[in-house]
Image (cartoon, rainbow, N blue to C red; front, top):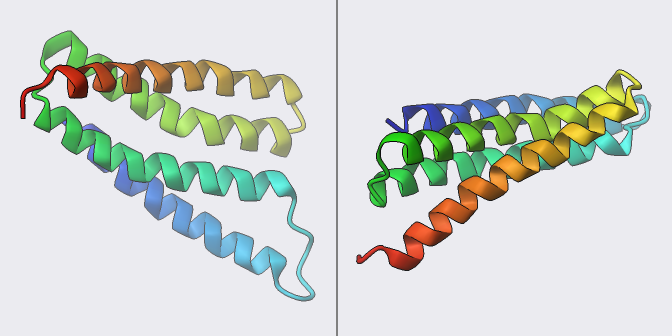
Length: 125
């Protein structure tokens, strides 16, 4: 069921909204300075969360089943959260090696999207 993808997408958007309000406070006149990494993580979480909802509908549309369905679903959800999370963790905790997690998560996102690309190219609508 794509409930996981859709729920993760909407949850990500809710978190992104709160994160955006925090960022708005930080850039207000007289507020503290906003580090650039906070803006980047906010944007990544928003875009990846919107795509999680879309991917949820695409998985249903192309009728992915079994292992393929699980792969697309879980690779995408992990990638959706680890890409912005690795930036926040690496910069916020001053642990630059955590940036490398974004490459692992990016690979998971790529595999999920490559699978859906194949389905879109071969699916008779």
